Length: 197
Figure 1 (cartoon, rainbow, N blue to C red):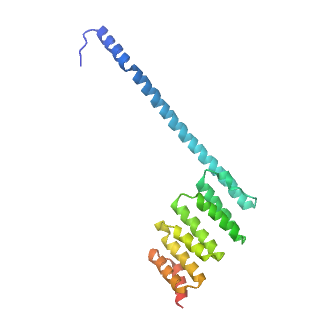
Figure 2 (cartoon, rainbow, N blue to C red; figure 1 turned 90 degrees about the vertical axis):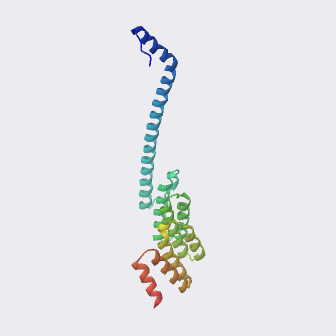
Figure 3 (cartoon, helix red, strand yellow; figure 1 turned 60 degrees about the horizontal axis):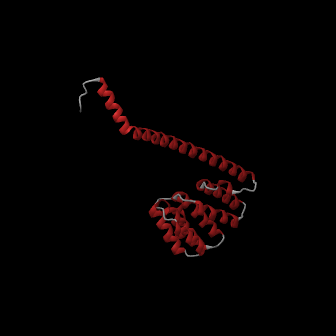
């Protein structure tokens, strides 16, 4: 580092450095502040969108509970909320014996879902509705779509239920045994015991 002998030389060195690097420092500061502001704006927009989606979901649920005609299009762009609302609507249709409407809602929910756990829930419910409609091969096909390991036991249990309804007791017994191998369940034990009698 050069040692400056006078104050004038130090001032001249600072001016020279500023001429050489000043634009880069200013541009860097502007870009850094702009990026920081942009990131904060993006985060606030995300929070606002999530709050709005949550409020719309609550309104849709209130409509479902009160029996109003509900449009899930209000939840467009919010797949998780849309799928949950479709599940609630399907549950209401099942309780009212409107299985075709429940099937349609579950298919919409299935298309909207990206999360493996939620996909498994929607698809297993759709398989149960298909079985109630006596669309056994469609129910079994739906169960084949659930690949998440956490759903192995439940899928095998429902597969056993569908196969039993078809009259294939041995295949149902095998499915129940596969369910028990994946996870212990008193309900599945009882179903397996009933088949042994």
